[in-house]
Image 1: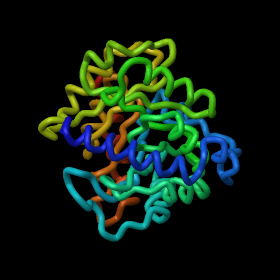
Image 2: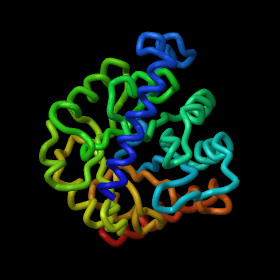
Image 3: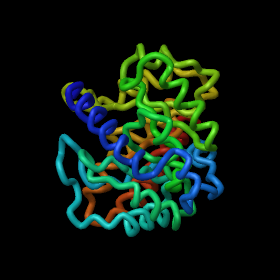
Amino acid sequence: MDNILNKITTQTRSDLSKRKREISFRDLNSLPMFDKKSRDFKSAIHKSDQISIIAEVKKASPSKGVIRDDFEPLKIASQYIENGAAAISVLTDEPFFNGSLKYLELISDMSSIPILRKDFIVDTYQVKEAKAYGADAVLLIVSIYSGNQLHELIAACREFGLFSLVECYHEDELQSIHWDEVEIVGVNNRNLATFDVDVHRGVELLKQSPNHIVKVSESGIYKPEDLLLLYENGIDSALIGEYLMKQPDIGMALKLLLSEFQSLKKVSESNLK
């Protein structure tokens, strides 16, 4: 997977150089969504009495290929909003995930809940670009940065009024974070070498972050028992993509996942009394 990550980031930089020639950093200001007031991503996913869901609009992935053939981004986003999602994650990487900045723009324009741009962000241009296409937050993947790059990208998010979800995988990545500049941290439960998923491992890593940090568990979450595990360990939110995208009725799948979690939560709390 490290080779895939290298391939993706190399392609990202190549595509980015083309986009910069088409729309300059300065000209991003002129795009219609640039001056739109940002929605509060942090508050949306941080609820003291429940686990929130960041539901993902995702057509494909490098490991699984096309996940959903009947892919209608606006319809999917509407189903998420109607059935209890706290926020929506939109894949914008085109070569490897069949994503699009256009999906981000269209969904942001109709959404009543915050939107996360999920991509391989390697340049401050992409942060401003996210703002210009309607994102309220961006994903920052620690494993693809070196030097002061993470610090610079977090600063760019602040400059453009966006929240940053800082994603880690290894413990040393988590330990390298400067907690005074991070508000939201995520741990990817998927092993980037084998693609195996271990939600418990992700929980243990997230528990190492300070209490005031909003915590997000990413990947491999598909049942209410997973959500209960996260909730009981102080995790605030779950980012769920592939599981929902594979369901015949995406909205109903999300609704059932949340309602069944609430039922398990009540039983668990009653047992503690």
